[in-house]
Length: 199
Image 1: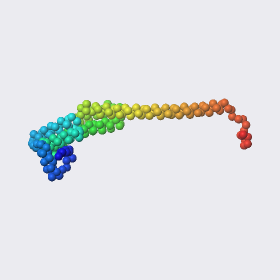
Image 2 (image 1 turned 60 degrees about the vertical axis):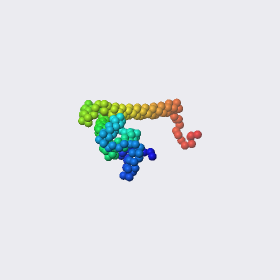
Image 3 (image 1 turned 45 degrees about the vertical axis):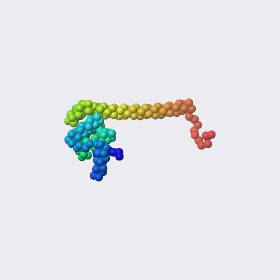
Image 4 (image 1 turned 30 degrees about the vertical axis):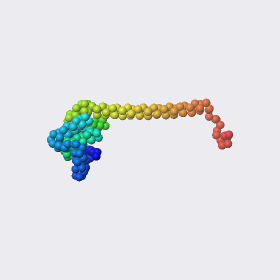
């Protein structure tokens, strides 16, 4: 019988199903401990995966951790508690980055380039949030690029509008000049327009 493992948060087995899973796992030679040592080993492995992916676990990572949890006899509630503790610093860090990014977006919405005072205020926010320059540098680079792209897009749109207006004005000028030229080549008739005189 093949054992199918799920992520602990997705594991909603009834008590009878848990017993059956336990029998299958024991039948497969898995040793259950549920000791402090096994929980520490599970935590270390979880921390290794979290560090490698900046707190994001892939589907394969979750499968490995689920198998390890069962092998070590770590209860689902214990695994959930370990997951929460291990991922908390990453989640806090991401919230801080989002907060900084939101402040930067708001600053750019009101002014670009940023004034000296605004830049200093953003730097102060970075310090309060406990973020390093290397943490915020990618966010700032992305935002500056977007703002520069928007400025160039606006400039390009203005150039296209001016070009179009100039072209239209040139066409209008050409049309008026052509009419005047034609008018000068064929002087108007000196005969009064009387009904019946046109043929």
